[in-house]
Length: 276
Image (cartoon, rainbow, N blue to C red):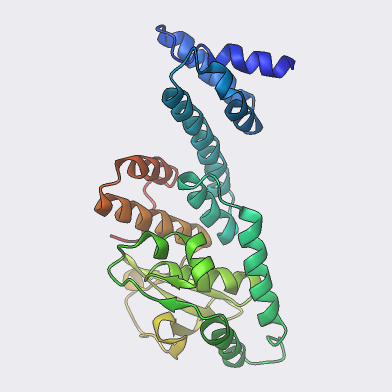
């Protein structure tokens, strides 16, 4: 009850005419932690006669986004962050209501199916063939929307539900499941393009993978000059690519609201860019 009273008192000042008061209130509400955001939503009806409802809802949404961005920055400060965590954080920025546990469980279930047959006793090619069969045939992931115009094929949680994605999200699903099964499949980046590759024990490329042709194996070019040689990208790079591609989509859609959100998300990555 005491906390409710504090929240109501602070929220009643978010539209104060004095900017220093507004800034202080926002800082104090932020310091109360992420759990306080849900409490604010619950208490919002009690303030409808004091503050415009739309203004209050927007303010609460901004606080929630601030907390998500803070977690994203912490994620990016990790030297080797988990791919799934990063993709869900970026998605959470535009869809705060997503059930993260649902999607982590979904991916784990698929990976468990794959791990029933994948083995250290098999060759890299044999394990990849098992992985590909389950990914494309049994589960049914497939590539659609080559022009990257449809949100349902661009947002990773939607793609995990439907199994239909675009030129960015189907590879991301492929990489996600590779992490959960322990297969060393990583993006090999050259310039502003990347190619999935199966790595050896020394992080050398054993072979490349064409995800758009059901995991077809092919070899890369050898003997390139040092400055032109591709490099293995960390999962942080894949999360950056995901964020950049959403930013592109919302810009093409003219969605100013989500575009502003994505601009804040991309600020967390600094100058780290991998696609045009």
